[in-house]
Every structure is written in structure tokens, then in C-alpha cells.
Image 1 (spheres, rainbow, N blue to C red):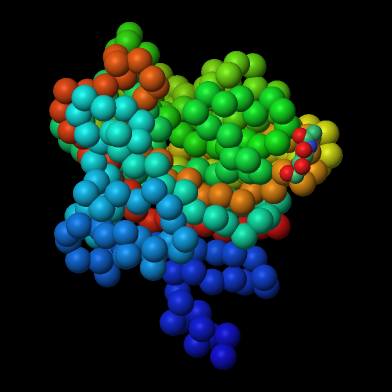
Image 2 (image 1 turned 45 degrees about the vertical axis):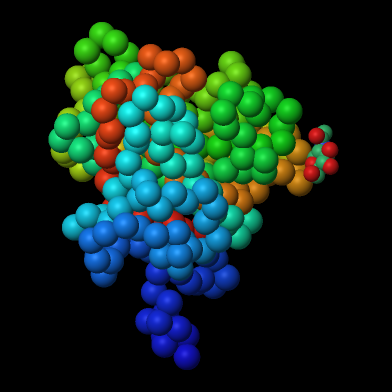
Length: 256
Ligand SMILES: *[C@@H]1O[C@H](CO)[C@@H](O)[C@H](O)[C@H]1NC(C)=O
């Protein structure tokens, strides 16, 4: 019976009570990636935008609209996860060969804990946190990926990158796939015994202990984020052209 269920619901299942999801979009035809399809793929996903989601050659492609930022530019979709204290995920991402880096933005899948703080709403009250990835153009000919983290001890109002980047020298390449791995473990109580890890193409970009929260009722990982947009809030984060980001091979695994 268990084997049959796994075959039927291959993209979304539990193993010993722990949540897992695996999506490669290979069986999706080219065309608009509708909200209804996204809901059957992801579950209770909110914030989907039909007109900015497209399946292209077995990969979802998100459009980042010109002359816009944040939700007006791209897509900010969130999905509830079964609450857990340790999760990991993997996905592939690719910037279109003509992508305009502009200043940067949020890219791909991430996790929220407790209140799931984002948007320069600092997590210093100890009630939430998040881990996402940004691409960033430092305006001195380097464009890179970096962690973007909200947590109890974050030093400023907006997400912390811990001063690390990928690649550690040189720039990202357009039209190339990158493999992202994220791992989040909740801390307990007010201890700094949580963990955050970001690996890109197998290299450990960030791997450290962290205090995400101090409120025991807010410590769990409860949200999958799928965010693709430019910004930043100042107009210099915008682009004058539409941009496309591709994703593939999403795997989410609850560890505890
Ligand atoms: C901790 O979370 C609970 C549940 O949401 C909330 O009622 C309480 O105010 C929070 N405590 C603090 C100190 O923020």
C-alpha cells in the first residue's frame, strides 16, 4: 500500500512522518504555468502569477518585468510546510542568456521560520526568520549569489549576507545552471544552537551556527518561499528590459 501511494503521489509524500517533495517538471507541457497547476504541484501556494510563470522545455520560467520592483516585478509565492525543526532543499537555477543583472534581487526557493520575516522587517524580536538567496551586482564588475538571512541577531534591518558570495571571485554566468542547496535547523530556547547552510555547486558558501529565534512557539520552519524579483527598493534596482529566470529539480526534505 505504501509503495502504491508513493507511485501515485510521487511529487509529495511523507517518509516516517517527515515531509518530502520532489518536482522536476519534465511531464509539464510548454505554456503558461497556471495557478491551478502550481497548486497541484506545490500544494497551498499563495501569490502565484499566471502571467509571469511559464513552462519552457521542462523547466518553470519566471518573468521579471521591466521598470518594476518586488511584487510588481516578479513573483513572491509562499507555501505552508508541515512545521519542523530541520529542513533541507535543493534546486537548480539559470539566468537567461540575455538577463540584465541590474543591481540584484531575490532568487529561488527558501525557508521561513515562525513569522518568516522578510522585506527589511528585522527579526530582532525573536519571532521569526528566513533564508533566501540573492543575486547581486556590486557595481565593480562582480555579480554573484549570496545568502540573504533574517534572524534574531541580524546586524541591520535588512537581510544579512555574512559577507560571503558565490563565486568567491569573478562573476556568475548567464545561461549556466547553478545548483543550490539550503539547510536550516531551528535553535532551541535562546541558544545559538541552530544552523544555516548554503552550498552552491557543491561549495559551502555559508555553514554556521545561528540563533534564529528566541520565542519557543516561533522556532519551527513552516514556510517554503519561491521568490523571484528585482529589489531592493530604490529605482536603481530596476531594469529597462524584462528578464527570465529558470528553475529545475526541486527537492525538499524535512529532516526533523
Ligand atoms: C511568542 O509567540 C507567541 C505566539 O505567537 C506570542 O503570543 C508571544 O507574544 C510571543 N512572545 C514574544 C516575547 O514576542
